[in-house]
Length: 291
Length: 153
Image (cartoon, rainbow over all chains, first blue to last red; front, side, top):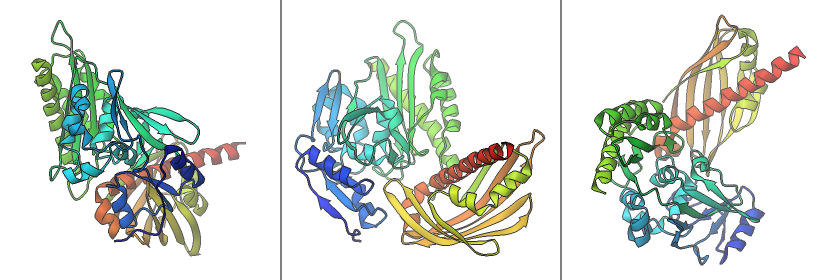
């Protein structure tokens, strides 16, 4: 298990890293935590000619406040979701998600932006980014652009990032205060990739018990995180409760596009998605009541 | 791994059949196809470079057309191998013309994928196969459009 030959660069500032990438179009790969990239290199499934290690670039390891949300730098580890006070104050669902994302050893090394850029369809962070309307900042040799998460994930391991761009920051706006969130998943072992997962958000009108906003984003069920608008629409205007949750769950189970593999059949995944929908909506509702 | 699909072409059955057995369109539309050369009667040698994000593999292999029943059906047999694993598959393509002068192409196949890629990529194989088949037929659909426009002009 040794990687194929590559050239290794460890630039000390972002500009240098961008120049190296720009000089080697399509041949470069960014190394941050290495929890996805290193196995691919060692198994020789990926054979980039150039590795640009960004760990020694100062000023990219941060979780900071922006307006009402948080901005997470390219070198911030997944562990920060559990340890940073700001996450607990402003984006509780990210903290809850921290318990599903991989095993502790992996979270100590793996980065939040790395997981987003890797775009594994069964990973939690891409689904959270889509559900929470995050913006992903792609910095290129000449400029930076903020890409809405909804348009960032294009297919399996494929994003809107250009070969000479680095995902330097993930911006999560704080969700509206009247909205409650829940993340749930089913996997064979805790910390493994999800067979099916869901990020659900729910808001209920102040004066009467009627759902006025809903978010349902699934992961592990297609090429990218999948927002199911049809199921969301069924919730709007309904009384929050089992009838509405059931209807949304059934439609979600039909709308997603899961595959068969040795771990589970597509049919099983649809059934699990429906069950998780009910549970996640119940959990979100409990949180709304508690507030 | 079962592979199934149904794709509609807005033309009668004969031009769709011709498109589906034309090596040039097959090469142009097969995702990652670097070369396709005829080595015998309905036998082709192909090189494919298949990439899913950073994961890339080169496969060399053979494609055979069998059981040709023009213009209604034929079978494709694909065998390929590379450093990251192998793939073997057989699929039947059936063409059906509907009354409104459209042709449906039905695909029913079975593929085995083995080696490293199947071991670590198991949870992605079917999805990626589905996606590649979709790309293949969407490309053929647009090729058909170009052909029909040319013959009309």
